Image (cartoon, rainbow over the protein chains, first blue to last red):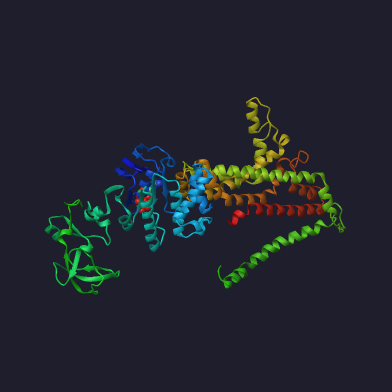
Length: 333
Length: 290
Ligand SMILES: Nc1ncnc2c1ncn2[C@@H]1O[C@H](COP(=O)(O)OP(=O)(O)OP(=O)(O)O)[C@@H](O)[C@H]1O
Ligand SMILES: [Mg+2]
């Protein structure tokens, strides 16, 4: 079980209110991702759930029981830190065994669980090494191992992959997703990388300055962002925002169109000059200038489309994929 | 220093310093060894004949010698125990964020800057004097018999004075080490269910092992040669109750004017210091390269 309910919780450091009162409901077995720009309060929110920080007001319920004043160890949650926070003077085995030893489990059971966890995480060959003798990915796995042996009600991850290189990040992303499928335990995962959020989450919570901007599945957020912030944050490359005359035509203060929803060709209602082209092989991202709409306007075309720097290009937006926003930046349905 | 060239360059660069240090150390050492084999008493002017092992024999068989060795070890051990444990305690207290931390830290380190003679005199006259000292006054006002510190518990009193001087040193080094401990490790341990005591034992103490080693090694070197505190308070007495090796050497060479005997004591002290150092290195040195 791992159902978590936040009711009107807020957090202030001194006079600064980092998290204004917010509500959030996390179902058992869900993979929830907190995403938002740096400094928006993701870590703080996670630490409130973990119990490492006291809430300023509001209440936290875990599996229906009030846990607002429960110390971290008693909440039955396990956390994986960004810096891994492994114990440097203990071997991998002792690191993984530490929470069990603290729970005064008997040695036979500890050995069994540690061996199992090491097997699952491919750590068996390194089990007697110190953390300093491991690579970043291996350290990450030890940290995860230390979390899973306790069989917690929920896992909390604070940007666990941000210290890894790009290739490893993709691999670990998959491993964590697979772990979630296998354990079927609630996971709360903090990241500022929207790709991680989109690929891993059942439910994404988009935060800005401590305020929840939108909660929803990755596709909901992609297809129907509630406001301009979410629209700009989710999706890569970013959505193009167009104001003034063109927006007025659609009866909105601003409109947004994703790069993948604009077609390029020799004819079309919009016209511009090709700037930088980013070739990814499968796709090419063109930065288009002098459109009179937004500068630059980003467009995604298939990899075969060949335009070079300075060419004039015509664009056709897909009308049904245009998002409309009012003066306050809220979506017009 | 990865390459061969840079390594030999480094050796060349530091050689003047090494030579200077070597000369600085070797000349007095050789002179001491040389004197220790002479019958050389300042009261007998003229001849300084070769004496063989005679000085060593008399120095070691002197009844004060055993007392001095024992006192030295008790003094060093006592001060080490008090300063390391007390320093740990103080460092943990000071590590918490609290009001006026800066001022408190300065106050904590202050005793280290007081000269040993001065601090010993202050302790002797203002605190430990049975009639005028603060401790005596407190005892009297509470109706107890005041303790005559230097008469009844002379060695313990000196241990107390020296500990007062060295506690700040230990505290400061341990505090610095404690502040370098990654907070996330403590938080991880907290999430893992470790209580305060377990966090101290399994996380903080191993992290501090290196700093504790440094504190013990450095202090041992200085504590073996405690002198001023003894000279101004007890003069090694009553009897030989507070005579340590350094003080015994002082007695031989400067009170009995026997340079040969004093030098022999000096050589013995050097050997003893090295034995202690090797012993300590062996015992805790593995923390240094971990
Ligand atoms: N202990 C603290 N005291 C005062 N302010 C704090 C404290 N911890 C965090 N803050 C402030 O709270 C805000 C949110 O911090 P938080 O660490 O939650 O951000 P984040 O979303 O995790 O950012 P990042 O993606 O960079 O990790 C920041 O503005 C930060 O300065
Ligand atoms: Mg953070």
